[in-house]
Image (cartoon, rainbow, N blue to C red; front, side, top):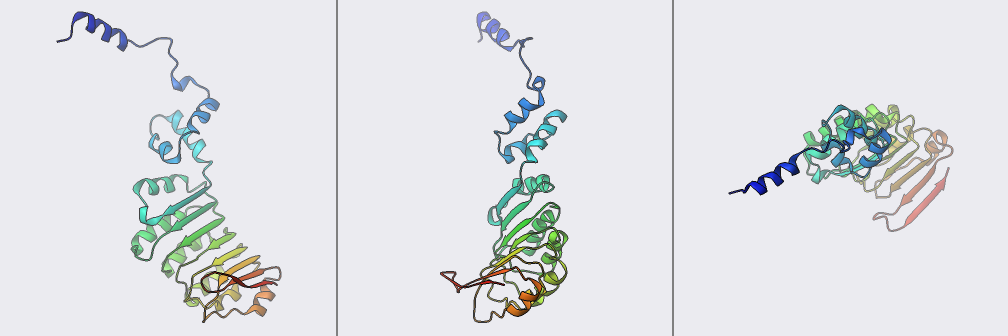
Length: 234
């Protein structure tokens, strides 16, 4: 049983201090600095606390320009983070995995397709489908660099994408795509750098690339990427 002395002590401890400083009394600069020590996941967990703190949190989240996800561990927190920061992102990397369902890949790409400021996209380990390219196409006119390594591409799929959706593309990386022959690359224009891995079916029309991309550099690695076998300044 609690004694009277213990009860009085407990009551004293519970009494609010009228002179205590409430965090909301701090100016915005102080709050922004305090919240800058939290990671993105901690920030989004605090959303909904109050309007003022939500504004401070979003100021900090706007600094999030580059994200990288491993889809095998893509959680509900990752999805929520991507939903919130998608308007601010300029670079994103998504490593998927060939066994991941197409519905899951589509859900992630739908979020990425809302990243209107995105300039760099790295998408790895995907069995590329037309519906994926359609979503990527929503932001492709703003992309300057795209890395589709290990995505099991085909020229049939990529022809329309390169022909109509890559007007701003300056750099493309295609490593580990052994079903891609490279014939569709002739539709690229204004390219500055192409990095590709060689294989027995690779067919690059260098002369046509030279016409459409007079300042481009072509870097070709041997299969397995152990050494560079060709470095062409067009």
